[in-house]
Amino acid sequence: MAKRAAIVGGGVIGGGWAARFLLMGWDVRLYDTGPDARRRVEHMLENARAAMPGLWDVALPEEGRLSFHDELAEAVKGADWIQESLPERLDLKREVFARIQAVCDESAVIGSSTSGFRPSDLAEGAARPGQIVVAHPFNPVYLLPLVEIVAPPETGEARLELIRRRMREIGCQPLFLRREIDAHIADRLLEAVWREALWLVSDGVADTAEIDDAIRYGFGLRWAQMGLFETYRIAGGEAGMRQFLTQFGPALKWPWSKLTDVPELTDELVETIASQSDAQSGRHSIADLERIRDANLVAILRGLKTRDWGAGRLLNAGDRRMAQGPKSLEAMALTGPLPTGARAVPLDWTDYNGHMTEHRYLQAFGDATDRFLRLIGVDEDYLAGGQSFFTAETHIRHLGEARAGARLTIDTQLLMAEGRKAQVFHRMWEDARLVATAEHMLVHVDLESRRAAAPGAKVQDCLAKIAKAHAHLPRPEGAGAAVGRKPDRGAKDKAEG
Ligand SMILES: NC(=O)c1ccc[n+]([C@@H]2O[C@H](COP(=O)([O-])OP(=O)(O)OC[C@H]3O[C@@H](n4cnc5c(N)ncnc54)[C@H](O)[C@@H]3O)[C@@H](O)[C@H]2O)c1
Image 1 (cartoon, rainbow, N blue to C red):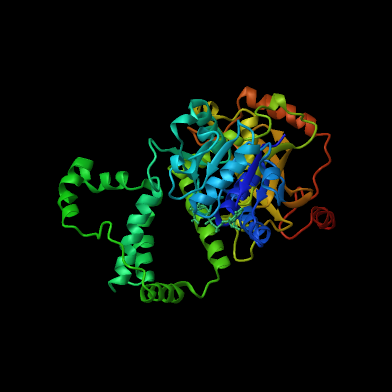
Image 2 (image 1 turned 90 degrees about the vertical axis):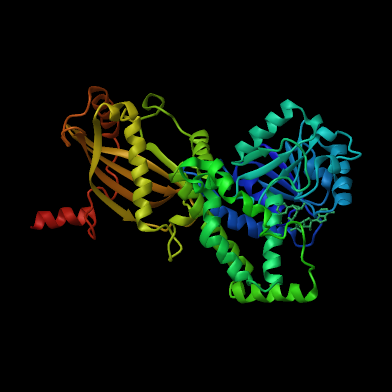
């Protein structure tokens, strides 16, 4: 049975949590007293469906079921995880926690999205203080993996371990704070930068667009991949962090920054900032900016995946954890085409036509070929032994559109395996709709001589076994087709010629 989350408050953050849990296969019950919650959550879910599943190179679980509830008790009863994302008001949060604890399971985790309150503030007067922890996410919750966890001492090891496991299951990176502190870690840092930015506008040094440029063309790019300390270590040169501190330490005392002084948010300053922001970004609607932000974040995160670094490393670990399907040929029925791929179309694989761009079909089919090869024994050891298959020829037919977030599966039929050659035919599906096919001629190669050579005995055996079983399958429609010509027409032309 699917696990269940209760989302209490479905605004910017609650809606993002709902999307993340749902797309990770949890059922979600949502409670929000606002008049517009359903529409806003559904809008956010639409964005999340396009952006989130494609972060991974394997298929996510089936999406869970979303329901909206007018009664808090109905939403939270029986839930495994209850996430409070109400406005940042302590009295409101405390009152709602009391109502939640009166009906929820004692084993459930109650997380609060609070940006600033400590767990001891939140749990004052609570029936079970150890059950309430800060679980502070970042917007958009369905793309950014960090969740700061601040737990009171009463929480206990077993529950902390459960929290760690649950967060990992939904693709998050829990960061456990050693002790509680107002505004946790990240918002402390952000507030310092935010304060300085407001001073720079207030003092007329820069406008909002110039400050954003100072971040996004420079240190913002560094921060996404190495953070602060690792970046500064490099800046210290060969001598590393010690040298950096010696060199730049004195500047800290000058001081360049305004520290904890806060500019008065006068009507005039608010107007200045708001009108500069309109001039900077007013040509885009908020919905457009959300989509632009999501597409940029997906591109950055997937870029970090190829480097197996930072947040990309977390996503790669998720790929390994969520990989489905039989791991070996022995565990598979060979009577039909073999399952060789299941994934969603990443947002950064789509083009100006709004669908998957052509070279990404080859990438998805190439991954399917790799999976097929692993099934027949072409694994790391085999490659290390100096043998591999190279692709000699490819023919892809694009038969239907696939949009961002679409769930695709690929299956593979072995058309021929003779000596050094193997010919495979992949079909890509979105549910029962055929989206594309790819036919590849593979040639087995000795990696030292870089010449064609017979495969090893085990690989030959596997190929022979599949070939024998697949000989009974009908030849796939489209096999042997040349560009621009249907296969039957090709055969006719040949006969006439
Ligand atoms: N916005 C951010 O960037 C961000 C980031 C991290 C954490 N947070 C924290 O998340 C929490 C929620 O912030 P948000 O930005 O999503 O706010 P929001 O105003 O967008 O959403 C709050 C939601 O709660 C609902 N609500 C209000 N009172 C309610 C009640 N009594 N019962 C049920 N529902 C009620 C509202 O209808 C609204 O949909 C805050 O604690 C905030 O500090 C915000």
